[in-house]
Length: 331
Image (tube, rainbow, N blue to C red; front, side, top):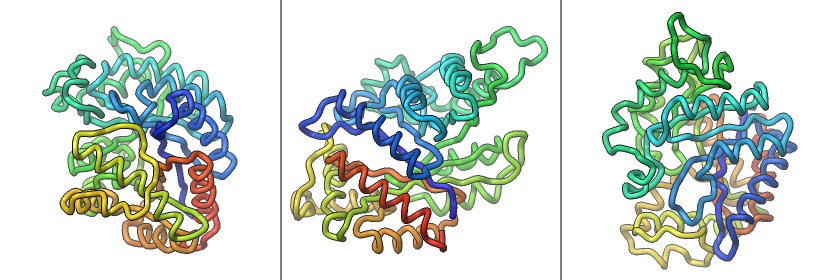
């Protein structure tokens, strides 16, 4: 058995409110802890009506307070949106309040549209400074250095574990160069997955943080009693991706029958490619799919997500997935 975790975006289903979404996230986190998930990560997105995790560090604190043992973190914080010192202070505070339970995954994309990126005071060229910002942030979370004039308080000497997130070779190369764990966004951008894994593992340089490569793979899972029900649940995420790609983002849509008939062929093909790393269906079907992904890519951990409209169905999917991942001897 390999470790398995949850990636949550605090989805706002059509017909529900942001308050409902945040309440549901806390409920899912408490249950995920009891079901054996190792981590509960939240992702930073802005100006999206279907996602309520924009204030990621704040929500991480709420989830950590509502649980007791599960690791809680960012999957991730989009570092170019923030000054490294601010992130170090936020996560240093979290790590001080919840020792040995906080993770910090870092990405270089804005997590939003360009107009919102500008509203975040993010320059469009800031991505080029990502490696520098990562190293600066890690300095603030480490021991004071001789002559260091700026310190993160709280933050210094907390050594919050830092992960590099990515969906291309850039993140794989940086994680390998810095000797950090690497999480690949295969749940929505799997095109470069195999090449990124190869680059990361072959060029990894051991560091004080990590002796050998540690790769986490993200997977979509829609588990239900039957194949038909699992596929039906998946249609909410399919519609959400189609809406995003056509410039019409909104709340998480209700599931529908015959979802492919609602898309243009080119959109349907793009959605299918983006969601290729997905297991949907009955427990047996999901088990077979997960076994296949894990046998093929050999991740050190998996992190599962599932944008499901109905909260009870979402809880059931994550519960069934935990039982599958914990119970099968081949994982």
